[in-house]
Image (tube, rainbow, N blue to C red; front, side, top):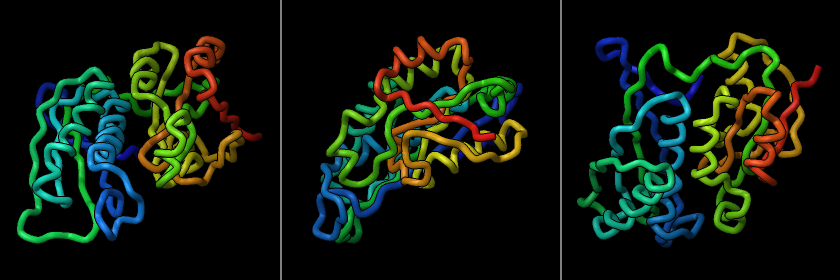
Length: 238
């Protein structure tokens, strides 16, 4: 199922929680990938917020767990605020910093919290006959910074989220396209099937540089135009 936790509140509404973490990516001697703290937080926030919004929830706050250093808190917050800005959100940020001990590798966690009306959850709403596509390329590690032109912009994510022609959106994480495709089918009560796509099906999607969509086949031309070269069709094999 989707990487979002739902907890019942009142009046048919539910608390929705999504999270992402990052380790060994940053500016410390032991990090495997070098990246500014602001950039690392941006991509972690991007994942958590995309997961939250994609299920139909309204975001309310962001929680930051900073295991980098006290003096990186502001930079990390700037990264989160950048992601929020690109998603047209203004959210409070709270959290905690490990200030008792220093680390040789960077690490952080970002949690996005919001609410959703139970009947408006955007899960399992893809009808028979829908088509599928991946928006953006799955990238991980240094490739994320080296190929920004293939990272699906959050502005495009927002546009497709609002499109009546798009049924579901699923951020693609470290388990890859095929895994998310199988999860989407299962959520809609369908048997898992093989699929074909111009992109590698089992490569890590890293910090959700791409996402899967199900959509109305009548709108394919408009969606292709909207996404441009970031549109990669995904076909179910018979």
